[in-house]
Length: 393
Ligand SMILES: [Zn+2]
Ligand SMILES: [Zn+2]
Image (cartoon, rainbow, N blue to C red; front, side, top):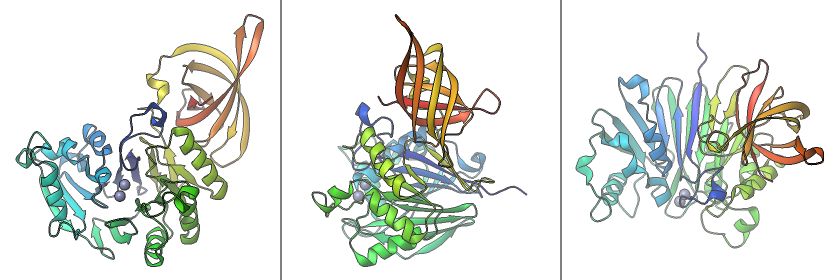
């Protein structure tokens, strides 16, 4: 018997507008797009922000291409959740079939999402029109409170508190439950309850964390977004197991998101900050939730590297939350980061103190660097993991 496993990939995590500022590069600048592959092979896409283009360029049709059907759940019609649609190349391929789910907007009426497609590609906003989109597209209206099944998976939609409306989705798969609640602001008792219902006992609860708790109470009140602290409160109250902070503000630099994540981790055991390229596996034996960053877009691969050998002492926190200290040799280093071989398994997105012995004019000198764990791979040495860090100081 095979163990059911679901795989959740983050293709876009930034709120409001894409960012290309290098200071936001580590968490990523594409707007919301997630992909969930359920154990039965059903492929879900959550939102169509600019991250959708990246997904399209690495497209692997579900079910080995035999019956390429994909379920796309759209939370609402704000730009950052739809702007990837015209740039999603699988929509231009005849064999593909897409099932879109979204709500009837009172501003658009019937076939709201279909109208959004047409409007986005109308002259003079886009060079080709809808006739170029050859894939089959089916549109289904869902309303807050609806539940429906796709394959073995149960989907529940609930209204969230956001200007012009937004749906949150809960997807229950045999490997575990994912609750996706982007774009919501606390303060409406009925909709706050909807949010808790979506998150109830979820293995992964993805929540809007655009603003700081201070901003949320003052200058950003009424803007339709939430904070890490509200996410922690809901996760605790609803018994969610892992909280993912999502929809980062375009003005939040990586350092600011680091600080938000650090504060959230002081209050709740299992928290990650959504990061472009992050993959969370649900249902793997021994450990129900595993997050990792495959090495495709992290700095240690692309930056100018130097083969070197530095003795180093590394201090950090393990996946299980214990402090560790370990001596190792750093063999792969650049100005931005390093690949470090460790016996301990550090927690993804945690800080490592790396003290290296560097030869200087007056003999060997200690060099202290603060690294941030962006990636963990199986190491080449037996019993070791290869840990990619980005230096933040
Ligand atoms: Zn948004
Ligand atoms: Zn919005």
